[in-house]
Image (cartoon, rainbow, N blue to C red):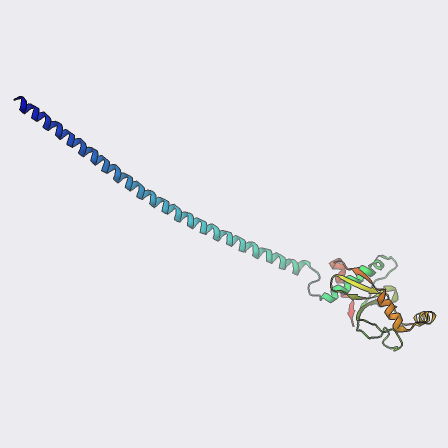
Length: 228
């Protein structure tokens, strides 16, 4: 009888042990499945976040490019508008602007003289090398180099002769306003001919830097300019 009871107890204990093992195993499997599901869901979320981030970055880059394009367009429009509406020298040639700037800088003092009645016309004569100071008198001075001569209608307006150096400077030459008896007398008194006289003027030319000047004043001079 005791042996039967002992065997029964052993059997019960064994069954309880198997049940515990089975429960532990089931719990372990469930936990493992739970971890797997969680991992899969996390991977999906990470992937979705990356996709959203990529889309967001693309949208941000597109927005930046769009804003940049708008700014560039606006900047160009402002520049074009500024040139068209605010620069009074638009439409004038570089030569016209140069002649006017040179005149205003070197002869501009006369404009402040209260007795001066104003410049009616600014004559521009481009003298080629070998041309005469007085085209009607073949005994007059010959220009050894190509120069530009600026003069007003009257001698009181002033005059000057120069050569552009192409770098923002000019070389000014003290050629006389006209070929008259005073010049001829000077040549006779100094025992020199017209060629020597002309060369001495070239040798003693002086360089002047020309500034930008005032655009409105430059335009006023251009408007009375006569290029011959």
